[in-house]
Each structure stands twice: as C-alpha cells, then as structure tokens.
Length: 202
Image (cartoon, rainbow, N blue to C red; front, side, top):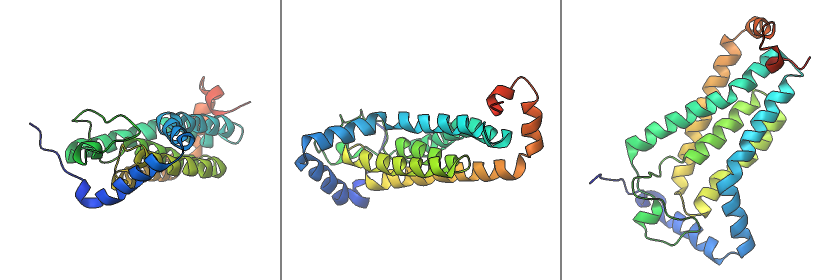
C-alpha cells in the first residue's frame, strides 16, 4: 500500500468551506464552474494559437516565441507531474470524505500540485512574452481555472497555488531565456527557410 500525504492538515477547513458554498450555490453557477473546470484549458490553448498567429504579423522573433509556447507549457506540466509523484498527496475527497461537484478521482491520482493550475499559469506567463493583451486575458483565465478546481472539489487551495507557482516559474524562466539567448538573427534565418509561413505572415 502506498502511503499518501494528508493535505487536509494544511487548509482542510478552507477547502470544506468552499465545497459547502458550492453545494449551496445556484445550479447554473455550479454547472458553469464545472464546465469551465473541465474545458477551460481549451480556451487557454486557443489563446496561445491566437498569440502565435498574431505574432507572425509583428516579427519572426515574436512568432518563434509563440511557437515555443506549447512546448514550454508541456515542460511545466512535466515538472509539476514530477513534484506530484514525489509528494503523493491524497485527493481531498478521499481524505475528508466529502461530496464534490466533480467525481472523486481514483486513489493514486495525486492532488498536489494541480496540473490544471500549472498548465494555465504557464500559458498565461509565456503569453506575456508574445502579447501583453493576450497574456492579461490568460491570467484571468488562469485565476478562474485555479478557483474552479477548488470549487468542484478536485483540489485543496494550496494545491492550485503551488501548481500556479510551478507553472508560472517554469514559463518565466523559459521566456527570459528565449529573450536573452535566442537572437533575432536566428529567427530571421529560420524565416528564410521553409519555416517562413510559421514565422512571418508575408
């Protein structure tokens, strides 16, 4: 039997308070939050695609950063998953035995840190390096995602906060590295190859 960490000792009361509020809230609100929690990352992916597409009209360097955004998000997800398997925190619905809006995951589907929060935060941060406007929209989406994961009962508050920090830090380090170490000359060279349609609109 695998020993699992009980995260309820950190902010269990805050979690149960949010879950209790969710059960007392109007059905339309719960349905909206559940839908966002389930499909919201698709909007985040769409924002990354739009960011790359629009960057093609500005410069090859900006478009190259936009192209790397999904890779950076994948790296953030991988780093978060490594931490998740290292900590092995049981889901709150198992530790606290509460009824949640989202079906309780099977044992072994660890809770800390939240992958959803890590992905959303990583996308939001790297998007700032592509477009500040889209980055701001992505930040709002990321905040809504982190809140929704607690609302539906999938995570403790500290799970989503940690996931957002992990994803955000990975994306920030990657974005700064690209800005400093990847010169515009490289992007220009790539734009002169068959990759040009990916980097420049004309």
